[in-house]
Image (cartoon, rainbow, N blue to C red; front, side, top):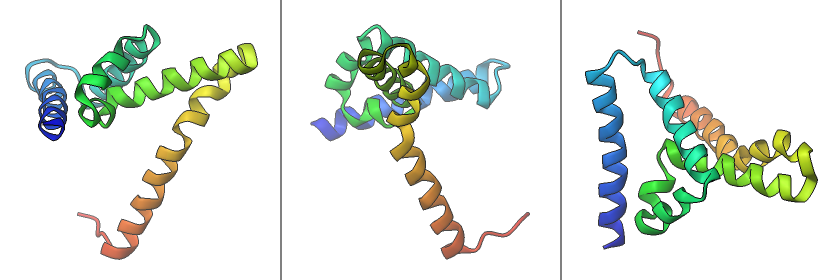
Length: 117
């Protein structure tokens, strides 16, 4: 049942993005930023954690989950380091995911040798 919940919730987040893209004049990059900021704000108020408990990976994998991760990391660093944690918390919390994305993109580029269109 957890897999089904994750699939449905993650799919609904993607459907919301597609509806915004199709029905408004908002560009895709602005929708991505909107999702990350929404995850940050909801995570900052502690609301996204309840959503993650319900939806599991369906809430942590899409972009609002990335925003939530930034908010959690920043709040943790502020608790430990004070005001300096505002600058370092987000970077520490997202470093592993961003590094993995860069590494996997490089490997995919080497393995599949993409060509320009």
